[in-house]
Length: 436
Image (cartoon, rainbow, N blue to C red; front, side):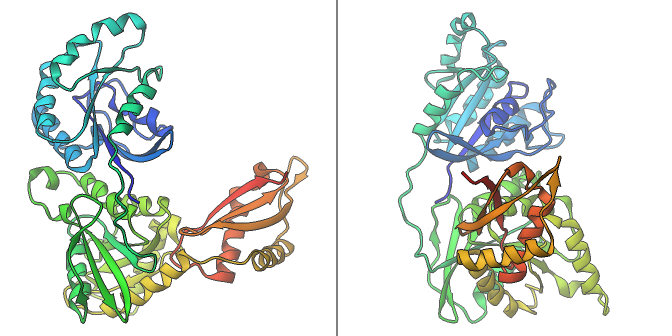
């Protein structure tokens, strides 16, 4: 089930990033009292009561050297395009400004639910000064304070009322859903066409539960698959071409609904910082991952080229050394046939469940070879381990003190699990828990 998306929209310096950080519970956006300073992460996950959702901080969408109002307009359009619900952020200390009115005009046309928030209302007396914001035409303004965390509960209660209901129109459990993500112009659309066009039977093109996404179900070797392709990535126009960060927003909607994610790189251009950021979202989401190096036909090669390219990929993507690498050309269809078997393999790894007794035999042997560490005279004791979930495979290690389960030893245990059971292409989650 895809998560609802909430976007925070407003003119600069109204506190969008502060509220964003409050909602997601960690400091992931840069906050400074200077307009337009947000340059960091702009998309994260939030929770409220029983709801899980994704949230966009549009202050982080850098449009470049556009004029002030044009910049606001473009950021708002991106948010409107992505969001299920929009938080319209204003500044209670400054009152209604002409820039607020410009944003309001854009949001009127969106036909999306808009919740009006008046930030920087830091004391009860200031609540009497927010009535002017009714003039913006979005109903009751919700007074909040980003610096003190006041009023966020009421605001999120109202936001949650507008979340779309999931209609259950997804696919059978046996259908493997995979998506292609990456920077613009790495060849994602060409690769989709190559996969669908080579001895494939396209069942249909139907709109998925994610807005602006095209699901392409098809069969290959008697198995059913769905390619989740984001139609919005093909849009032309200044708004979408002027910011690479937009591709991250698009990729996340596809990642949400995928079992396996193909991270597509451009062999001609090499690895860019944006590639790592997009891949990082797939890793954090716990999806099965395959790294696809496209346009492999376009570079000059010798006997060392593939090895050197793989070393470069492993150096840049240290956080997902479990992901297999495929080299191909979507244009010439060279090595296209290697993709589907690896998708099958990664999908199986992602859903693999290991029996508890077999798992503990492997880990006890590993601990016998590499004894647990000590800290301040206390040795880590591992009592037993159990797998509690799949997609991704998730393990709970019951120990005497979770603080003693250091990252390096946890990584050792994860590697032993991979050596014994594979899990190629799938991240592994491992948590220490004190045995009661």
